[in-house]
Image (cartoon, rainbow, N blue to C red; front, side, top):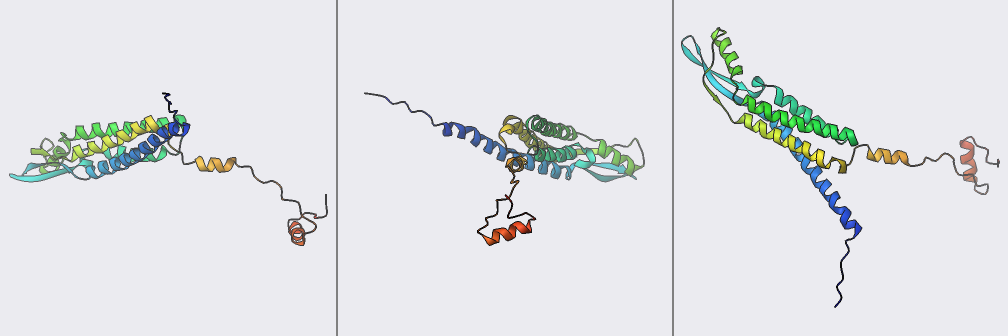
Length: 213
């Protein structure tokens, strides 16, 4: 009995990396856009709350993420811009932009986690409310929104890592324009046919001599 060994077709071998590139591209776009949106949304929510003693009574205070730190929102915007710029550059430029995207995600995570236990924003508000620079907030508590911002940073970080790993397989915005520029341009018009009157008139309109050799 003879055994026949199947030889993989070259097209099937090439389809694997192409399919992985498309999947990683879609996943990176989803993670990057969603991560930036989540981080920006989280910074607009209340991160901490407490009370300050004013005229012998308790005065409620709250602090949004933007009051605590502006780093997550700023890095989310930079990361979103880097996600778009990944498709506008190639080779070393794409690697650099992908690294920037990953760093934005890591920085967002770090800033959000540090802000999760920060009380300086509420202390400043307590000092202003009490009119005493040494006043601090009482009954301090934190919400889950800083950790939501950290999740957004993780998604940005994942998008950056995908760009670093698979970015070479992704298309670039300028590709179709470069292909169009590579096409040879027509530098000369077809010679006029003396037997076709319409060709003679067209040649005259172009300022050519239809009777010339």
